[in-house]
Structure formats: C-alpha cells, structure tokens
Image (tube, rainbow, N blue to C red; front, side):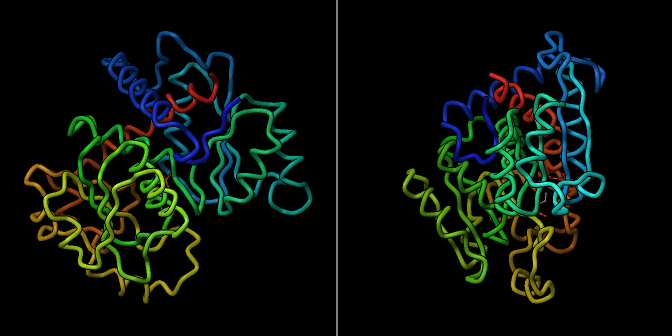
Length: 308
Ligand code: CP
Ligand code: NVA
C-alpha cells in the first residue's frame, strides 16, 4: 500500500512512470465523453473518500471525474459534516473507520501534521490534495502540461515568481530535483523558499537559483509560473504581503523577457491583476485551462500507482 503525500517521497523513476501513464491514458480517451470510463476500468468496484478542510473547485471535481474514468466512485466529505477535526474523535480513529468503507482517501488539510498522522493509521492509500506544506497532485499535472507543450522537462528552465515559500513552490522545488529541470525563483527576501526543502533539493542535485530581481529570474526561460500571493489559511497581513510581492507580477513586460515561445502556468484560482494580469492569463502563451484539465489525467495515474 502506498501513499502519495509529497513529491520527495517517490523515486524519479516512479514519478516519470506516473507522467507517462497519464499521457498514454489521456491519448487513449480521444473521443470519449468526459465521465465515460477507460476501457480497462482499473478502479472498478472501488471508491475513494475525499475530505476537505478547505475550499476546492479543481481538486474536488477532477478527483471525482478521475475515479469515474477509472471505473470507480467517490464519497465527498466536508470536515463540518463529520467528527474529524472537532476533537470528539481522534485522527487515528477516523483513519481506522474510513479505511473500512473505501479503497483510497484524498485529504485537503490545513495541517500537514494531521495528514501524516492520518496516513500513519490508515489501512488504505492516502493522497495529499493540498496541505499548507505541499501540493504534489497539482505539480504532477503541471509537469504533464509542460511536457505536452514543450517536450521533456529535463534540462529546461522554469521561473517561479512571487511567494517562494508556499505549498506550490515547495512541491515545485522538490520536482526540480526529481525531474532535473533548472528552477529560477524570483522572490523578495521575506518570501524566500523553505530552508529545509531547499537544502533537501540541493543535496539531491537540484539546479535552483534565487533572484531578488524578477527580470533576472525570467530571462530566457521556457516557462513562467506563479501562484496566489496569499494562500488559503495564510495568516499574514495580506496588504503588506501583496505590497512586497507587487513587483513580481507576471505581466506582458515580464513575459517578453522569457523565450518567445515560453508558456505561462498557474495552478488557479488566480488573483487577476495581482500575481498575473488578464492579458497574461488569457493570452496565447497561457496554458492554465490545460493544467486544470490535466488534474484529471495526472491524478488517475497517481491513484493507479497507489494501488500497485
Ligand atoms: N489548483 C487547485 O488545487 O485548485 P482548487 O483549490 O480549486 O482545488
Ligand atoms: N498556494 C495556494 C494554492 C491553491 C491551489 C493555496 O494554498 O491557497
């Protein structure tokens, strides 16, 4: 039984196999209706519980469709409707109980510690659908999207602008070590990457550079990526943080500094006019809708990997 909690937990080989399976399953579905199952239905007779402590559009729906396409079903729970998290039932007991009802569980949590605790006691695979520390499912979809547009990500250069210390940047830093791409992080001193994740990446031979000047980070890159300046449950002075990140906005001027065929990526939801302008989000170089679609395909392979 395997859990999918962080990019760093899997070998480079395993991660690449997940991406390749996603590509091949997606290709085989050409002409299928969106919820029509794949021919082999590997999740047939099985179900996935999804538990949300925070709002979600993409993760909630893409996992639901992923389970259907694999021939299975889902049960969606909000923290409010169950005992979990209220103190009247421990995480251990919730994990044991839910393990009796389904074959897999996906959790979106405000506490990565709770996710680890849940996984420790669960008898079924646990998938991280976003924690304050990492967002590995999104990153797998982003790698898939990058490769569909630009070929192998190995040896390419990607710029990350804005908050260098959130769940997305953490998982992306881990991915740069596993998939061997160069990562330029453009961020202010106050939002530099998580020190221990950066140290792990460097130990694992990642090629990462940190730039205070956003123009230096994006010069000649193959892709520019950013994320919300204020993440869910981010306990900060929002206006102060936005002011600090203002010069890291992805706009036309910034896009021009990248390669002429560079792509723009964002996991969504996007703060239009904040971390990216409308022109960029809706522009020709943007692949944000493809990233959203690819959540389904990447997650199907992640689910299959967990079952192997
Ligand atoms: N990108 C992402 O995880 O979106 P949701 O918050 O809508 O799930
Ligand atoms: N960093 C963002 C990602 C949203 C998908 C957040 O945690 O809110």
